[in-house]
Image (cartoon, rainbow, N blue to C red):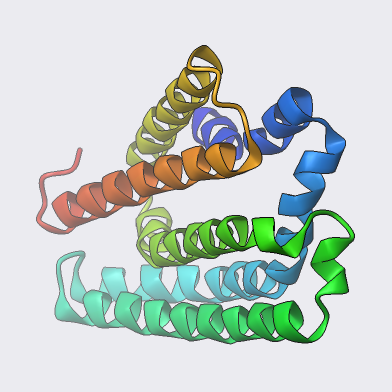
Length: 201
């Protein structure tokens, strides 16, 4: 429960914070970009459902620190990164061929920075997914819950700092999300690496 709540906080709390701080129109910018990245989310979810039992079988057959498990995770990672690249291409095409899609919510000259940040956030989530799925497949839910909680607290601290420093704008908010996702990815990778080495509890 703690892990699910914390992950939800890291992933979606910004929607409420941005809307509360800047109004619904401000979040419309992020929502418009997120909608274009919806295919990546769908593919990530579908592949995770498929790969999780596969990773569990590989780990059970060859061991948690085996090259076979590492190869399976790497294959999953490659599939997701290629999906991310394809989705980025779609976003670029939409930006240059249908500029009205973005201008309806904000001046397109001001939205480029937000698009880049959201794109990088999607990459960080993509890179995190395979190792996270491997941890789930091997039953290491406590470690995942712990890092999700730490990342959510880190994100809360960043958002609080934004308010305290009175630098409230959409770019800063999205940048705060980016920092939170970087923390999440780093902790996830470190725990996964320790787990494979046999030190995770």
